[in-house]
Image (cartoon, rainbow, N blue to C red; front, side):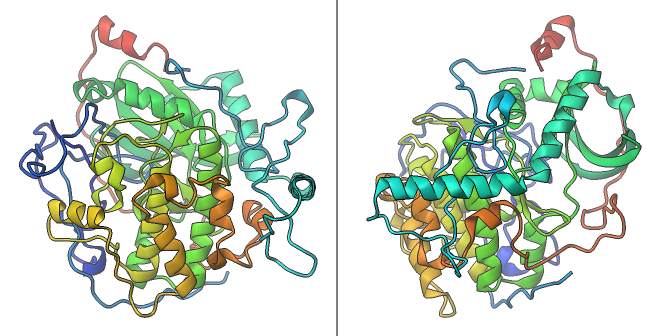
Length: 487
């Protein structure tokens, strides 16, 4: 039985600081590397593996574990101005303009009243509240927050829904778009910048092209369908948008949002580590996205800097939902990135949405320290340290951030922050987040610490350069084509 983990993208490039270096094996894709020797002294993993694309927008895979090297000194970041449905899958509640998890309200468009959005008190930007107050007061606050958010609306979500309706009504093919630069490549295919004229406006998208023959060879048909099924049912300001999907004889296509700023990892690599306010800004937006996903019983399961993109305004966009899964309770699929694995995944005890809050604790630590809390020269060492649970904090670490990280990195998932009675509210009410106006955060009104420079709407300078595609894909039999009839 093999564990199948994701490659740490770009961390083995020559200019990568040692704090973020995670060398990877060059084992060919079709030669799955077993970790049996690594796990001889550990619990036997359960059944089920998963391999999904992992570069920008999801594009490359690797069957081997990776490990980080030792940390080094780093500098802070400076601010810059400027349809397949799996059996048993529940109906998702799409995001509204007022809540990270509310219903769209059907034909009326009325937003639900969420508990995620509580108004700032007069004269203060903090949304912290006392849990000792009456339930009526708390509900009234939530309703006022929902109304305030709904009044300003979310243009990003509104445009997403509008374009989804447009593409659904007309039907599209690869010929509907003008092909541009390649944004990423991987085992299944590549992601390309494409343009499309809508209402006399030229719009730019990321078109993800996946080879059917490779998907079948790697037995990833169900995973790709699941990824598409989840993405087409969700809409959130901090999650990359899927507009439509289609296929032809050789490929599957997913038309996604073009996020012009590239990966958060690139900024973290340049800075060494982030200053406290920068890390808090990104963590707050991710927390809102997780609250929304978890309300819909979706476990993301692949948080890391490489899967966080920065849009043109400097806000976070979570991408690559290859490991995402609808998990009402627990699942035993063995997947993830070694440094970010929760103990319950390593021990094959079954895991659920709690693994995302663990991963957020790892990410906050890495953003502030410049390296993850559990690192070693080999994968087995990483897993041993994760299970050991000992965390050493740098001296510069903010005490409130330290407190939050400790509460997120609790081995017992029943006691982990984010998994208690109040769920995501417990995370948002931590002292490190004091001063965050969560309604403004959802509405993208908080000034980002960094805004990417872009010469034009189709600027790809924040992405690596890739050669043009070469070679033809294998033709599929009628039986193989039938596997994708419901894509």
